[in-house]
Length: 196
Image (cartoon, rainbow, N blue to C red; front, side, top):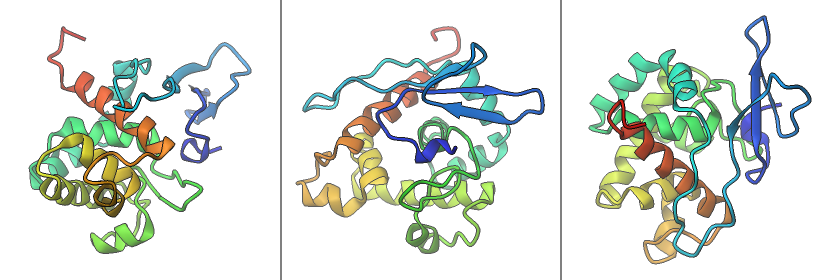
C-alpha cells in the first residue's frame, strides 16, 4: 500500500522488515510499527500549528539518500533545502515510487501536467522529480511573493485555486490539513541542531 494513496485523515505507521522493505499501515498489527505521520486535529479557519510526531531523526535518515539531489535542487532554485525536505516528507514519506489516487507521482508527487511543464520525463527518477518539484516551488515563491503558506497551499491545490480564493488558502479540507503539516515540519527542520 502506498502512503500517498492513503486517506489524508489517517495516522500512518511504518516499519522496515529485515529485507529493508518499508511497510505502511493506518492500523499497525505489530509493535514494530512506528507512528510516522499523525493526522492533525480538525483545522481552524486560520490553519494553525499541528504537533510534530514524526521523529526528525527518521526524516533526516530518509532524506540522507537524496541529500545531494535536494541540496543541488535547492541551490539551483534559490530555495531552502528544509522546504524541499518538508514537502517530500509530507508528499511521499521519501518513497520514490509513490503514486496518489489522483495520479501524482514520485518523491514530490508531481502531477503529469506539472512534470511536463518542468521538463520531467520520468517522475519516478528521484533527480528529475526533485529538480522538477523545486522548479515548481520556485515559480510559486515568485508568484506568491515569498508567502510560504500560500506557496505550500498552491503546491497542494494548484496556483489557480489560491488565486480564485483571493490569494488565500483554499477551503479544501486536504489543503487546510496539508499546509500546517508542511509548515510545522519545515520550521522544525529549520531549527538549529540542539534546539530540536
